[in-house]
Image (cartoon, rainbow, N blue to C red; front, side):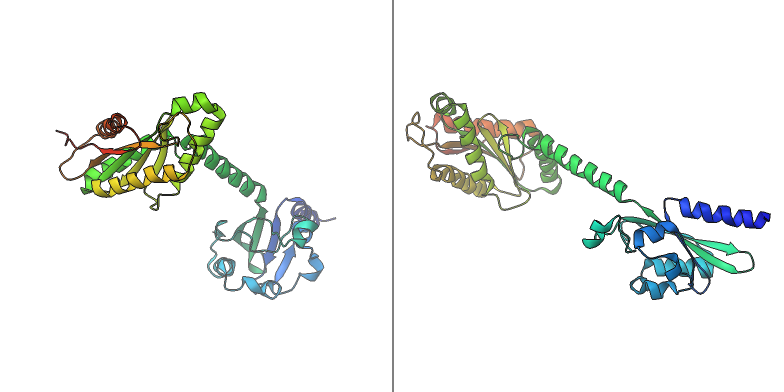
Length: 321
């Protein structure tokens, strides 16, 4: 047996064993090699492909990115790696019969490489790798990251933004308001007589009260830039970018009335219903609050609402120095 025969047998054995698809095309795009991996995952034996025009077998790939890559390899001796994002599953490759029945193609990574064949001119090698596991792992990691982010920035009880989310958002919105000279309003909302409510109805019912109030307030916000957050305990805040004091006051009154409309019984409250008090602070024009200053202004307005008898809205009117 000659050395050349040994080499040929070795090459065929290697191509049969590698865990990737290998297709070799001649200068006329005829298939001259179709390895066992391709047979296994396409269900098409090499005997049905050898000598056939590649684009007769895969007519739907003509004019696609792989068509251009093959042309560049054969004519210009230029290798290409196809973007997996843009070319997720160009070949009808299936991991098993069940995937084939669902037409669920494996995720693929493709490389097209020019190959000089002695005495036969330029050919090109198409290598196909199954990246389904890697893609699935990346999706899992993205999903886990989204869950983690949600847990990090969402209140575990009510599902709305938490204090950390609020801290990030108020800092960003205050800087934006100062940069562009826009108004920024902050509503601080507190459920009236909540401790007596908890003492009377129990903490489980108290949690349900918080959930219902949060859900009701969340449904009021129409703009994606508005943010409702649980500030702590029975206290909520709403950030209102590009909102002047009058518009903020109107929304605050709507908030107060919306909670009354929930019709939640509160035996320990003078009105026998769950109500809220709201404090408002607005930065506009010459006002130059920092974050603590704006929060303190809204908190003082809320304190004034509590002392005014609760179930009302108060605005902070003193312009900061």
